[in-house]
Length: 154
Image 1: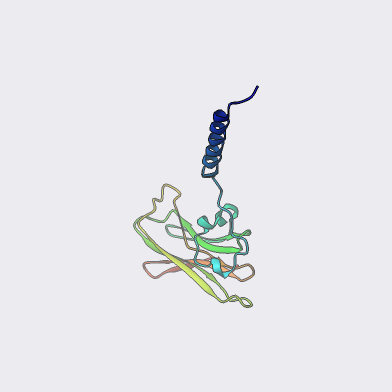
Image 2: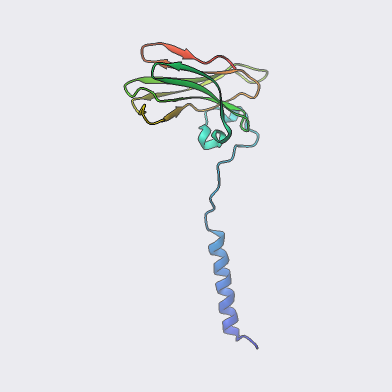
């Protein structure tokens, strides 16, 4: 059986249109840690980088109103400070610091949080990251009354 020429042309146009439609369907993708993350990652959001996916807490310190955590991502080789359950009537400034190591200079990131977290709901707040593959890092929090609470250098 032979297919009429107009029908073959119509089928070809439909097939081409289908390929174009399929080529433009957005694909869901998980965040992936950047390959070759270096100090260029300093100041980046750990969640946006995908670094939070494999992160662990390597040090912590408790203060009235919460706990400051030093987080580490082995895939990204970065640290950041995080806290949860901040008293909603307080303001805190979270800090993460990296000591100088080899040709990597010392650096720090900070972020200030006020009244935004509900202590009954496991809300989290965090700083941007510092690249620290071998350098020591620590997290600390400064309260509005001037008190500072720090994790040990790790």
